[in-house]
Amino acid sequence: MTTPPRILLDCDPGIDDAFALLCALRFTELAAITTVSGNVSINNTTRNARYLMDLAGADVPVHRGASAPLLVEGVAADEIHGSSGLGNLATPDSEHPESGLDAVDAILQYCADGDATVVATGPLTNIARALQKDPSLPERISHLYWMGGGTEGGNVTDRAEFNAWVDPHALDITLRSGISLTMFGLNLTHQVLMGQPEIDALRAARTSTSSVLADFLEFYRENGALHVEGQPMHDPCALLGLTHPDLFETTKSHIVTSTIDDEDRGRTFVHEPQTNVEHYVAVRADAPRVIDLIVQAAINPTPVA
Image (cartoon, helix red, strand yellow):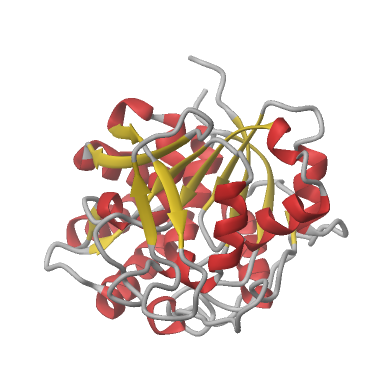
């Protein structure tokens, strides 16, 4: 078995982040979790990450991050994820401790030795703040796998995806920084739909994680479904794009975004590749195999031996 990649996961749990977290536990060496406001408030995203570590029996430090975007007012997606961020589950208590080190310093510490891999599944506020604190950071990040953006319209406006729209200035700073980045946008994630068959499979497995994740997925499908087949499973795609690259097709492109607060706010534009820009766009997924991996991780997030 190939040694799993060591990662830091920056996230805003969130139901699909919950699935991504369990994928990270199963398929990577998860060194740290940093939280950001996005799907719900920073209090809830941080508490939810801690709860999910309890649920999975994992000992991974959780670092609290930005409570608001850089320059615009924060907006949540609790109508999709529930008031707690985890469906009908009340804001959960957790015995898993919160780290005393904040997210920005955790990112800088994690990347200190260079060749660092980061997966981000929420607004990029923490990444941008780390770049502002240390502009040399791109030299120590080998690649950033980001769920956000898209090439074919949006889900918070007609033109912009949620993570990009919530903090367009953070996205702009990240895209301009020189970090090598792959964007897993809506054009890709809408190929990976989970619904009733996956709910049934999770319930049939009867594990401590699968039963809870089945409840999350049922809420997600009922409150956010865009397709008859189920709900796009956005965030795990960025994680699995790292661990199982053979299941994804990417193209090299130059990605930019709009920070102007008009109808184009947060829209991601894809241009011809440039020699000095290492941006990639995921365009196609082997959806059945990706879904199978997500279900495997939700049933048993124990690292693969």
